[in-house]
Length: 411
Ligand code: SF4
Ligand code: SF4
Image (tube, rainbow, N blue to C red; front, side, top):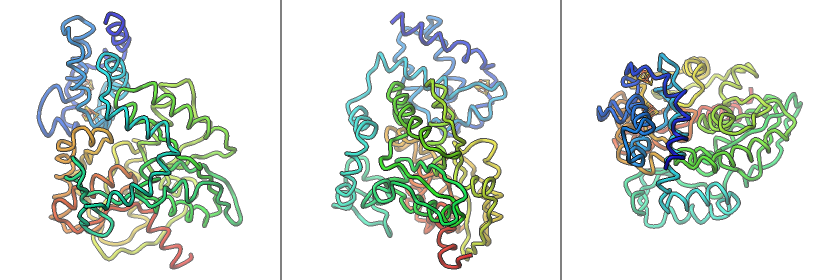
């Protein structure tokens, strides 16, 4: 126990930067929901301090408060003192996890997702069939499964075959001007393969060859959020080894959380750094390729900005949509986090859903029919909430529209 308290005290330098000003309250989606001090970053930081200062003897008691966090990073982004709340929470959880072990369901999921990506890819067709078994089709490829807590959800169908199986390898562009490494991430690999297909066809069209890993290794962030820091480090190391081997300048992602895990938080917890520039596909189209599309939509559409989208680029997302997609663009008043948070959605589904529902209500009331978002986690969460409130809107990545536009108009 003394050793663990010593490890927590190592966070003191980071923790002391918190001036307890409370600015984070206004930005925390969970605090906005239940107004509890233990929910917001300031409260969590005070709890960590109280353990290593000896005011709280049962350290495990605070794990549940640290776990009650979407890890959306809004507290960090809006903190006037620049407190690295994400680093503090991840490291503190890893220390406390040594006392309170991960429940068996968490271990089982991690083992399969992290250590057996080939096995996961092999059983994907079975999951595809199994998910439909007894499930109610809500619309198109959205189902309400019958399994346990999943029965409350409206979930998108799992792909028949993962994207890395169908598209792993090198996709050479005609008139090749450069090559990129495309890291799909688990959600695009299993749930949104059409996003990956869109990325390959659009990049190829503009003379960019695309390499896709034949086995998609998880970025490790689910392990980190569960306090399993060693597993997270292992996944970051394996991915960066693979990425660094490839002779190209850019890594393209379509999941801001994967990008955060591998290029921002990853190098802080491992000794390794990527030797390439990471780019979300939309900013790559804007800033590196300098290309524009002229998609016309005849239905009201809007944008959901993912919390983990690289901060300086967040504002550029709206500009990107305005410049590439013409039509009735509705800016939502609710600019909150969607509430997903990966493992948070698994552990605290009702709290997670409650955060997303308020946004879905606005989508319905404003008769918005399409939500664009460049994050598969947000897309899953918003799809669930939007179906639940009875809206007809669908959630999509703009790249799917760009790929269609190129196919139809070949410009
Ligand atoms: S985390 Fe930042 S915003 Fe929140 S109380 Fe501390 S200093 Fe203020
Ligand atoms: S990461 Fe998000 S949910 Fe967690 S404390 Fe900060 S603002 Fe709240």
